Length: 326
Image (cartoon, rainbow, N blue to C red; front, side, top):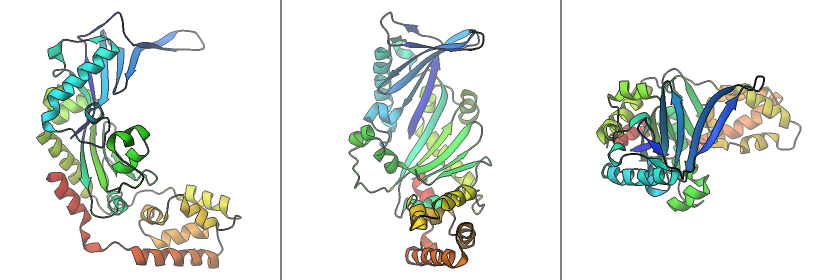
């Protein structure tokens, strides 16, 4: 149930033989050095060495599933803690970082993402269409291209997205996970992200990596975020209406212009984006077409919706919550 973690420590040394590079930011007008850091990328992690006040700190960022399995599609198991420490040790050794063997588990956490893969019975678009009408921290972002709904505030995020689709877009991860183009896209990934050290400490009452490796706590945090957003079901999110209108206008003179426009998203995603609001869709069509042509396209969309309508009695949100709580 852990995905990305970012750990930091002041207790470290760098071996003479190391793989760090230097990054310097300067003021081009004066030549003054504004900031300086050392960094190193390994196949499964990223290191930064930066000045934090009077202290020189080492930061290590990695996806725990990628450390363990080579792909983020898999979920780390509760019994994987020692194995994770072993894999981290290997990454530190490759970078040329020297840390006491006992120090890994007690490193402070400045970011942690708890996650859960939820197998779903219906199309992921059905679930996203419901979730996108929720709110969390008063900020929401929806990407239909990647089939993602993201809720965020200044220091936390809660997201749901098509995990198999994401893995398909990465050849390395696809190979590691055994994913092909024909693999069913039936995994909805939930992630709760705490993105600052103080937020981790204040929210979880934990500070170290060992303390945050707590699957009961992870489940509680995911459910807490899920319950927080579904209290606000029914609030319509802002759409990129003007962007769609301008796109339609740019295609208007081309043959089958509306089908060129709709092919970029597909009809199910287009309807979900507009929350099946045919009055709003009609308004969009009338910005680019005469009434007769606009109503012709609208009729075709309504026929598609009637044939593929999701039954209201599926209780999709309840299904998701029960699986998160299992």
